[in-house]
Length: 224
Ligand code: SAH
Image 1 (cartoon, helix red, strand yellow):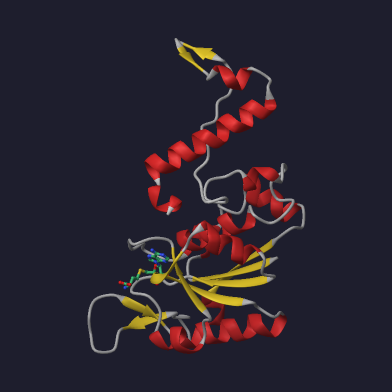
Image 2 (cartoon, helix red, strand yellow):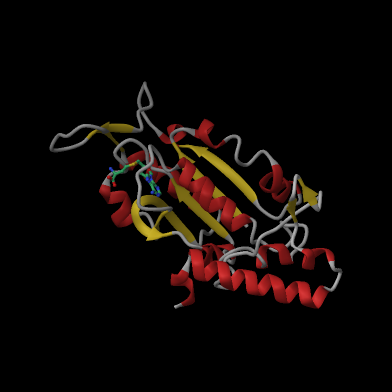
């Protein structure tokens, strides 16, 4: 998979892809991530990528021309399955959207900033709009990192134990059971005995019961 992230603030995306699972996924060649600086597609002496909103109102708007040039350039190099604009009023990002996107080959994630992007970008250039929740961020960069992270960890081979993505919350419509590690007793807080029993079948059964119980308590909507 290849992910191109278009941003006017590339530095905001430096660290999420340079550590841990996301970094290893790239080193293993399972995904490549390009952070593209919108400013490289700006024209004029000061290379502006934003301008005042027509009709007034506070806040700058990302201009259509650099975004169009950037997307056109990217599309000349590969076919993209989706061109996704990160937007607070977009389709809500869920594990099932992450699953769907993890099956795609190439994705563009477009980050807005300030007041957002010129509406014509949304009308003519993007294929999909995704929100990571009903709140407003300063820019799409953190949202794009969230989407890329959730998608990349689902690519087969990214997590060392393939089943560990499958046993995460939401994958099977349930939240995950609790997990524990050593020591088995800390202060007088004990790990559930069943987990130390070595009886794998009973442990699996216990985990499933815990998942159901927790889903019932915490996310009853998933059981509907
Ligand atoms: N004026 C816009 C908000 C702009 S926020 C409005 O009221 O809807 C600036 C940028 O941050 C947006 O263009 C978008 O790319 C990003 N952004 C903000 N909140 C987001 C969210 N919840 N999900 C995804 N992207 C978001």
